[in-house]
Image (tube, rainbow, N blue to C red; front, top):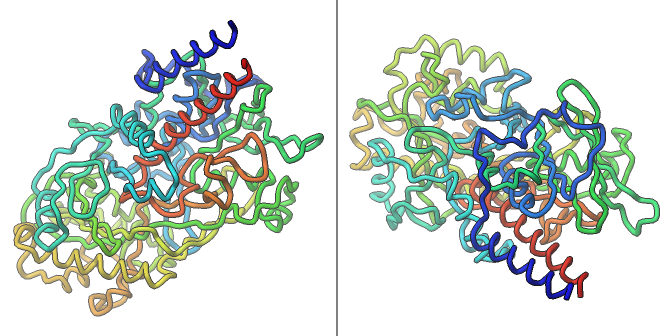
Length: 579
């Protein structure tokens, strides 16, 4: 009788949840389950503890809460009510905000490239350029993911946060130029990753309002989910006595006032801690908790739980390079909408328009602004705070006409080059030391050169001709950079004579860094940390290569995908106990 009853309950739950995407009544920003960490008790217990309320953590928490009690710990605040996050026209403002309460935290890689990591509920989806596109079928197959569940998980995400962009003149000209120069076929509007030129999705709606991974918490069961903001996790707690190998059983975190709290797992082999703290945060927290390269742990007087030399290895960031084209015609404010997916491993995208910066009244170029460190003609090692200040000051004196135009950029696939992450201190709020080794591998540099050559062809295409001054040749555009607000400082002269040098000198980030907890090196194919129990990592730190042209769709999908897999596995295990 008991077993039959359990099978009935399990089947009913599965049919309701897995097929119909059970959705509860609460919607952003009116979540009753979101609280400040200072309100947390000194000690609490949950079935799942998720560290990081970002692009993967939010969909993962929402999914697991539909059956079990879940704690989601986010070190930042809420994105709701912040127009610099919500409004497309304010893009770049959070990235240039260096205050302790900023939703972004700046870091500078050892390569000298200025970068940023998210510090807000919703993670990078609150800060990025909004482009939404899926991973290719080959990527899905290589990861060993279930294709049907992947597609269902993407759809679950898209029903809430993805939209078809409104195509205007600049983006249309770039699309038509890509087709004219042979980046074919024309794939129209699609979320799919296929060679050729396409219009992708966006997380900005028709009113220019951003929708983030935090919006996916609408799927959560409010009675089973607790989200704590301004909760910085300091370490994972492990049991080693009486265990065949270390078992995670809780975390220690502090609120904004420094108050110390502990959260523990409820008894049972299926309760788990899941790290979704991102490509910097997840390997950093593993090391701070004693799981990592033994030499690093000992250097910081961290007790060794498991010597795992691959933690922090394989850090990669897809290098971006761009050309600014002043336009004789006004252009729309646009972020990434069109992409040319080339057969040689370079993705061509574009952004345009005036005053991306928080409605401040001064022209800015959002993702290419010196305010966020994107000084594309200053070699990376020279991108100092003084250089940024000087460029920003000079930018403020430019007339509006100087901001009339846009950028065509290329980002390489992969990349093949990679580096590593190391601890600087035992403080989880400190940025670790990160080296990406941009263009270390010749294949990456070759892809950049081919991408820039493709951009040159698009600039010279008939379709794009009305957005370019006739007297400005491509070499002129490459070398005149000092007149553009992102290119105010000197660099190598005549860069057009060596596109290899141009790529090295003008490298920027597009914030697609990943790695540090690679699948088959740190975690297994179920995203369980190898060598310990009750601990997983589910986020972009597990990626060896970037999925598709832009990773956010796949990171959100992965949170949902793994949530469903974990639920199915646990339900099956509980059913077996009744047999």
